[in-house]
Figure 1 (tube, rainbow, N blue to C red):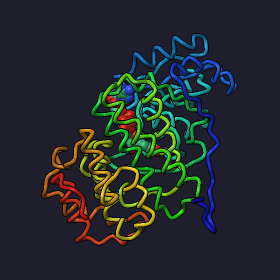
Figure 2: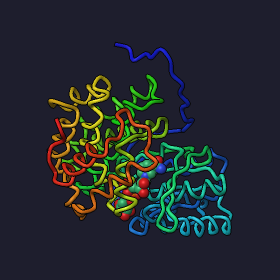
Figure 3: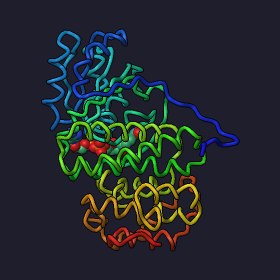
Amino acid sequence: MSRFMDSFTQTLPQVRVRFGAGIRHELGAEIEALGARRALILSTPPQADLAQELSDLIGGLSAGAYAGARMHTPVDVSEQATAHARDIGADCVVAVGGGSTTGLGKAIAWRTDLPQIVVPTTYAGSEATPILGQTEGGRKTTLSDRRVQPEVILYDPELVATLPAAMTVTSALNAMAHAAEGLYARDRGPLTTMMALEGLTAFRDALPAVVRDPADLRARGETLYGAWLCGTVLGTVGMALHHKLCHTLGGSFDLPHAETHAIVLPHAIAYNDRAVPDQLAPLSELFGGPSPGAALHRFAAGLGAPTALRELGLKESDLDRAVEIATQNPYWNPRPLEPAALRALLQRAWEGAEPEA
Ligand code: NAD
């Protein structure tokens, strides 16, 4: 059945995307195609060797490696890195890493309008969005801007092959959350629904293979394909309750990003299933379960994902405040935010129980 909708509005990003094992070797050609000659290569400190490898690979097109990216894109780090990019006369930034490194590249591009190339090494999906989240004085703010959208993405499965198994699974569930919430987004369209379902299918098929053999490059490539599609959904439509809960738990209780997404997703989906069962029904079919929430929970648990917020160090006594914060300035959601039902949702997620039927 076609996914045609009677009425929709969709603005899709213009991005050049290349896939393939070893595609990072095309980095120099991509820099030249942008008309650039001095690329600043960004990474986190643990991935400094990889940034240096890319810098060596492009030889004279490199303006050096800068391994200063940090979690949550702190504004002071972004300002230092932007000053460095200006000082050395960089005319393009290359981010090699996960969402934290991509975030630093976006923060520089937002301040300078330099073109960006991203070489992702996780499944977070930030490379496919015009969204920049930044932190300053303990507060996280998010903006969406044309300058922030990366121009080129190079998906090289060899670079995710090093992602440890636990992070592989949580990072994939983080990506899948973008697609799952895209299924009921108010501003969804036929293409975002197609991308969401195709992205979820790619993870369903390839993730178990990657967990069995982390060096399986074909399966790694398919998971990156899923990350691209899920990230594009995130960049194209609005997110709802699940992302709000994760931002609350990450921002106010300092819980780790991907793990929090992995635990909360089945519960947020079960909550919204009451309001939009038709839109979520494909999840039960794809993952095989009596309901979309249970199907996702079993898929995640079967791959060894964490299932309880208490395992991440959240205290049971924090749950009331989490509900309070999550219901302030709420995102649009298909089911009204009912504090008592949300408190019950968080209790189950805290304990690691199956989502509400
Ligand atoms: P991350 O980028 O913080 O990486 C976590 C750690 O894993 C880092 O130390 C990193 O160096 C290491 N790492 C990354 N890839 C590796 C690999 N292949 N092998 C070994 N180690 C590796 O984690 P993340 O989950 O990718 O990104 C999370 C951040 O991205 C959050 O701040 C989140 O808010 C942001 N994000 C933003 C968007 C957006 O659209 N703006 C989308 C998704 C996520």
